[in-house]
Image (cartoon, rainbow, N blue to C red; front, top):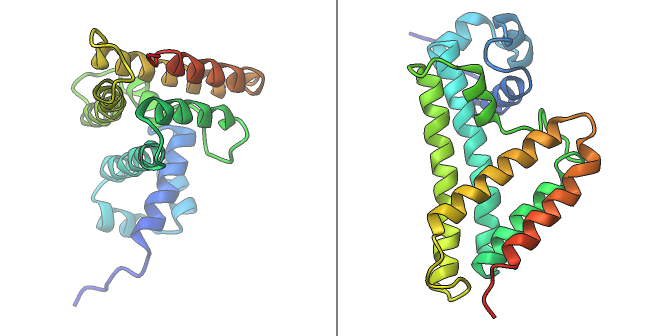
Amino acid sequence: MARKATFDRDDILMRARDLFWRKGYHATSLKDLEQVLELKPGSIYAAFGSKEALFSDALRVYARGSRSELVEAYEAGLSPLAALAAHARSLGGLCDADRPARACMLVKTILEHPDEDSPVRHLAEDLMDEAGARFIEGFRRAKAAGELPEKADPERLGRKFQSDVIGLRAIAQRSNGGDLVPMLAEDLAQSVEAMRQA
């Protein structure tokens, strides 16, 4: 009879996410995984199948965490534009937060996998599209609520907002990001608020 795994899968995936987010897929060795996950190679492969499969699951955990941050803003009872502005302001604390990296893990993955046929790259792009769809949905809600004019294009606004967020996170990764990020996050929040119709 096979032995049942005695580890907490969610905890392992969180630790794997943090390691991959910090070091990247290729720079993370099996030895790194053994040390951080406190598992032998056989247990890692028995539980996840491969390093790529473990990374994919960790990437989904990362995307789920990012999704919950925005959903919380939408569910806080704020108007759609106020929720998007609140999300932008929350990014002002990127450099103060204790996290493995400040840049977006999805973007880091795409940059690390230039081969367009890479399954990991496809997953990162799909998860990024899902994130963009949530921003687009926010602007759609704002338009439906009368916060935006009839001619406003929620898809274009959502994609622009996402590109600004990605850029903000890239700046946060820089050594001098702490001086720039709070100011730029506030600028982004104010630009969203300025869209509101009188």
